[in-house]
Length: 198
Picture 1 (spheres, rainbow, N blue to C red):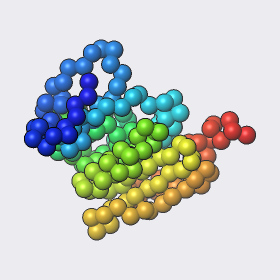
Picture 2 (picture 1 turned 30 degrees about the horizontal axis):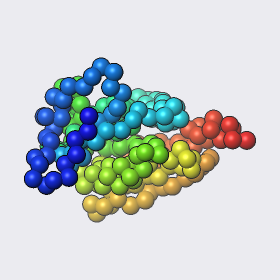
Picture 3 (picture 1 turned 90 degrees about the horizontal axis):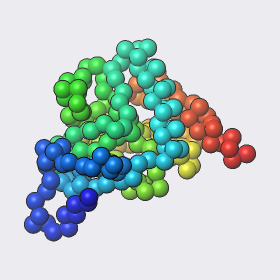
Picture 4 (picture 1 turned 180 degrees about the vertical axis):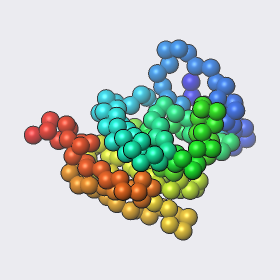
């Protein structure tokens, strides 16, 4: 199922309608809502899932230890407004903003931090569409994880715009402003892939 809204006269799909769409049990695609248009993508690769698992493990351990809030991993619906909802690879909600967790069902509003892991078919979505949405809705920190180049970029909000806070590749350490004191060694995230290439 794909809904294309090329004609501006066609009514945009809203969040309520999007949530009510019935999908076949064997449908393995992921569906997201961008400016009222439903877009689908394939399930992520195993490399993508491996990196996501490692990131989640490191973040979750730190967040739990410091009692900072909760981190969620895909599939999880992030509803930003009536016509925009997507599934971030990871989303952190601080304990001060736990009101964003809607009936333990989905996230309603801008999380404190969003992580997107780039796949070959999601480069534009992650680098442009989702990044612009997170900037527009003032997500405090936006991470782009690039498995191909084994790098991580962190963008933070300054004067209502994203600026690059940190960029590391291969084996550097990257730090978060939202998760105060959290540092991530890229060798722990991309280590297996680096060894496989040697």
